[in-house]
Image 1 (cartoon, rainbow, N blue to C red):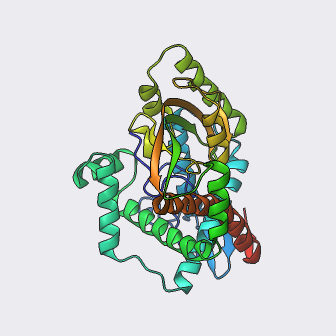
Image 2 (image 1 turned 180 degrees about the vertical axis):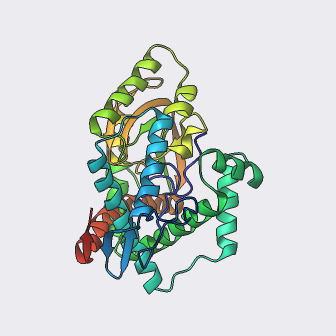
Length: 338
């Protein structure tokens, strides 16, 4: 079965389904189990595939990650790029994760068991499961609950580093909020009327196992199925990579100006009620959007300004995150040994 992503819907960062293993190792080791039936046979040595500052990524770690990616692709019926290209893409993702984990270690950032247990429980509940049912589902996906817990811990560490580093770089001034309000809403006062849109979507992500052409083709397939009268909620639950909305039939609820990325908002604004869009490209992949309803909503000035401030902040933070990751990657010592 397909489990919800463990943390933080989109943006963003960890777009592979579920958290993926990244273990730091300090030395070359022998295979975990000796071959007692053939004592004269040498066991293969693990090897270093990347040196990242003072850490290493081992061949066994990369192989484990590749196996997870391959299982994901198989479960979705997706084709994979060449082995060499896939290794390169997955290893690069692991390098950037390793840099961020090292930053967490250097800053003495930790995730205690109480926080971790709370998050794992939340993941299980978001999938409408008990912890026991979640553990069974994890094992059915070829993993263990213990390994998933460590994946979640690492993901939480990375997110905490990002929040510290990127959040401090993003500031939204009062003048920016004023300018946005005047441009987008036409009036600023004790009360203001804004247009809210109720929409749903199917998101097809770009991943190491799904390139640009494949993602667009899959989004066009979604669009065609909907045009032929298939139920939107059913298609969203089956196809959408936005796990935060997929289980709810793709429903995003009522959206206000600035709450979605520009490409999505522009396409949504151009749709009539009950109209379904062509595939729309954003930084997250391809969206197929349907507008369900629109309404005028009164909001107080204070609440309105805070929502606008948060929308501007989130949009800018997403952009800054990508720039920051490129920056820390360029500043790190990285020796790829594939």
